[in-house]
Length: 258
Image 1 (cartoon, rainbow, N blue to C red):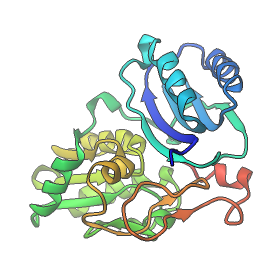
Image 2 (image 1 turned 60 degrees about the horizontal axis):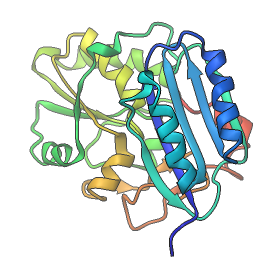
Image 3 (image 1 turned 135 degrees about the horizontal axis):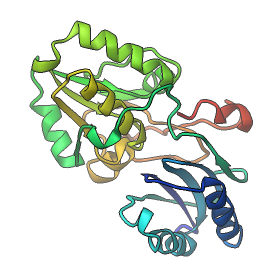
Image 4 (image 1 turned 180 degrees about the vertical axis):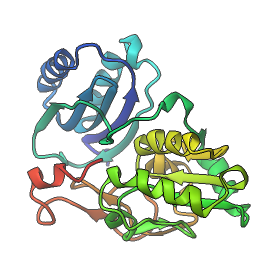
């Protein structure tokens, strides 16, 4: 039976001159669709997850992509029997990723599609390091086999880890592969490593969710940590972790996202 709802996730780095106006535009459009969401809009882009009827999801995509700023956005979709967010939340943020100093993401790593990523995992040698750039409590639940999973609790701790990595590994002779849930953290983190002198930096296009859609669970161990009520990308035969009530109250849960 075809499922009634759709879970839509995406991010887009682009210049938004008036993010407060963009918040109002999104709220007006999505309220008419009975969407429920968690959307953050900043001067440097948008990061969004939402649930809505499948036909409305395509209406939203068409509406968003009609704006040249968002024309090249990559969307990740999963069917659902119901809403997976409790309300429509759209907020302004000064920046999409919480770091004191942002690198130039235009100088980030190479985006690797899932099939090529799978091959790179299988051909990885001793000069290649695979890094999980999610928080420690996420990677503890599931990660790619052989990944280095820093025991960090917030993204803002990663710059220090990057400095330590540059001292531990020779940046000129170390190939770095990195991944996160949907891809947005890698945009920033790959650029950080490039600034530190790592020449070969690769990031999983679309994140773990896209890999699960395209490849399945090959080379993945455990479950996928998600911040809503759904069962996420089919990376294993086990049920994926559902981080919502009673794990965190909704307001508390928000502060753990990037």
